[in-house]
Image (tube, rainbow, N blue to C red; front, side, top):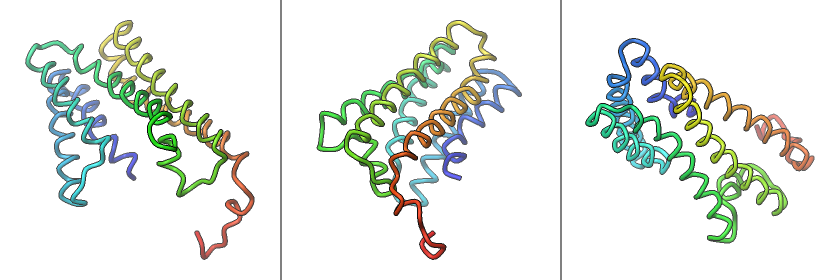
Length: 185
């Protein structure tokens, strides 16, 4: 459910683009992201960092797109977001005593330290590739193709990466973690 909630603004952008045009869709993603952040603040009295970063970048790049009537600004936003995450994941190797992926997942999975480091580097590389793929599609294909890629291509790449990650992690999960009784589930 959270996955769909995170995609809410992108899905509305996609629908608005297909029904109207890029500029209406840009206004829709700005409003949808504001609603998403506002709803989370109202419901939980906090906002996830990812949503806040996305809001700031949507306001900046979407605002420039609307003000200058140039879609290239909004097309850059996914790359900037992905590359910022790559920097954060990579930087976590040098700040603190655990990589970011371990800090996020350690309550759910127990892994040897070298595996956490490799997994963190994998996420760093994934975000770099996602950003580069976005730029490639934005500059080498039509606007319509980019809009489709933004929703379906990026989501598909993320799902595939998570599936590959699950297969990689499966060999490190101990038997005690795999054997949960129905009461523990």
